[in-house]
Length: 236
Image (cartoon, rainbow, N blue to C red):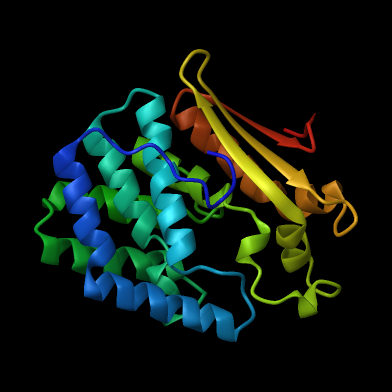
């Protein structure tokens, strides 16, 4: 999974692919994602639109595929990844709980079973690192890791605030990121290349410390180990 823009391997389930394709084209889902991203843009946040939604969806699904979970659970992780930030349309605070409710509405319209809707709702609530993965649910764990691993300069909307905004500076300094998943041994490794002329590697570790802690907890829910490498050096 190299770089945020890199294509990921397609899922082998035709039914799953068809339903995910329908979701990604769903007018309500797309309107909610667009509205959420417009709000975040207005308050100066990094990109949380279709690019981020699609990347997190594919990474979350791929994590479960590589670790041997079912195609059905991989599909739910993909759905959760695509919809996880729609709650930002109602404001940044509690966006994860708002997002879970909005995702329920979209999934009900698409005819998903209530049990599947519940798992996706739980995963969306849990993707905030303050909530963490409170129970060992693979869908929630994969979503959290997928979301936190999307660090890349393409998420920065403008370079005008790099000097004053550490989040923009760190994201813009991340010229490459790669998430590697291995089933044996069960390992999830996030490798980030930081341009130290823009931001020191320790700045990344400083602002993402709580996120990396949440990723380790999520990896344990998948019976795996999470590692972070910055410029080839293991940080966690």
